[in-house]
Every structure is written in structure tokens, then in C-alpha cells.
Length: 335
Image (cartoon, rainbow, N blue to C red; front, side, top):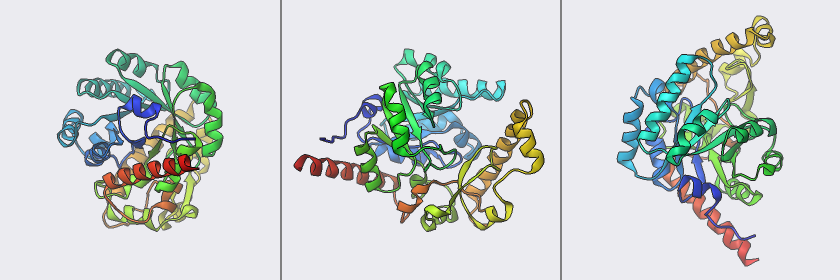
């Protein structure tokens, strides 16, 4: 098989390198997004991170990125309708993104149809986060043109299936599929591309960069961690989240208490319990991410930590991954 940089994803996103800097709460600051896009990958803005964590006006943040690079960026739209107020905010953010020239959107946690309907007239493209076939079907039925395959090595809300299992399951949809989870170095990246993915989405790898505004202790914890240090906790949002197993996490445990567990199983109670968890987690994750003392050891990360050895410029990572992909393609052609 001959391997080239151009994939259906790079055509959709209009970028040179099939690498996405995944949208991360609370770690996606505008400087990081701009650095990845400037190097030829696709930086993706996370509006809640920009406005709540980094205290920026969303439109101004997009313009700050544009002042650094004219290359394309994407936007993450969390489309779960937990409340009308939140939904209205997300609609407004999508409108602003379109006005400012954003044409690539990643949707999560719901039916992407309203985003697809809004961005398609402007030439926009929507990829949908999925962890299994049934959610992919929902995304495709809603008009998504690509799928972000979140596997069991991802940080944050990880899936339950391996890279290969998920790829095999999603091939039937005949749309571009992006590997999300477990990509920490260029070898893992090239191997995922050779497996058949159209791009790779990296989150944890881009936290340990010069441009990411997260704290030094957080970045160092990623460098120091190995795969065995990544565990799943249900105490953050009510569903499993991949985090670093720090002393703080060990002392608090990873399972909800008896009352919380009962509410999470209740048909009506689970909505309110998850809302409570989500609001609490928003503050906890924001505070721990920015805490330079390192005392708030509440850090999301995926199993890609095993391949992350140092803090470095985000653009250098993108360029090194590009070179690795070209190198693997050259070796394959020579066989």
C-alpha cells in the first residue's frame, strides 16, 4: 500500500497534515489551536474552554487565532441539550464561528443534525464523535460527513473498544474515520494511518506543549505517567473518564457514593445527577488545570502518555508526525 499525506480528511479540512489537536476542556487555549493549524494540522477551538476557563470573548479568540495564522481551524460543538440556555449559547457560538470563517465542526454528545443544517449552506463539514456503531449511525443519519472514533486509549470520555475494533465497526459507513486515543508519538501515529484511519486526533500529546496554558505540574504529570497510571473514574461526570491516578484520586476513589449511584440509575434522577457532576467537574478541572502549585491533582489524560517524553512546541510535533508519515510511506513503497 502506498501512503501519501492527502486523505479524505485533509480534503474536508483543507489542511496539509492529517492531525487534529482535539478540543479539550479545560486545555484548549487559542495559542495552542493557532500553533497546530499554523504547522499544517487542524487546531480545534472548544468554546466553553475559551470563554469559561480562559475568560475570552469567543469572537475575539477566533480573531486572535487568525492574527497568528490564516490556516483553517475547527470548532467543537457539544450538542447535548442539557438546558435551553446552554443550547442557545452553542447555537450562537456556531453562528459566530461561521461568520469568522470556520468551516470544520466536530460535534459531540447528541444528534448533529442542527449543526449540519446550519453549516452546510456555508460549505461547512461536520465530523461526529462516536464510541460505537449505534452512535455512528445516529451521526450519519444526522448528516455527519465523517466520524471521530474515540477508542479505549483516549483521555476524557474514552470508548470501550480498541483502535482496530472500532475502525472495523465503522468502515461500513464509507466516510472518513479519525483515530482518537492512544497517539503519543510519531510511530503510533504512522501505525494508525497504516491501519486505515484518515487522520488522528491528539489531545494529551498537545497538553504537554509550550503553547498550552495548562500548569507545569499537569504537563510534568503527563510526562512522568505510563499507561498503568491511567484509570477510569465515574466520580467526575457520572460516566467513565480517563484520568491520571494521582494521590488525590487514590484518596477520593473512583466510584460514586451510594446515593449518587442510585440517582444515576434512576430514570429521572440521572439527568439531575449528571448535571450536578458536570457543573462541579467544570470548576474542578478548570482549577486543577491552572494550579501551578500542583496540589490539585485532578488531571485528565489518555494512555498516549506512554509515548510522551518531553514538553515541546506544538508545531514541531505536527511537523515530526508529517515526516514520520512520509517516511513510512516511502518505506512501504520501496518494498
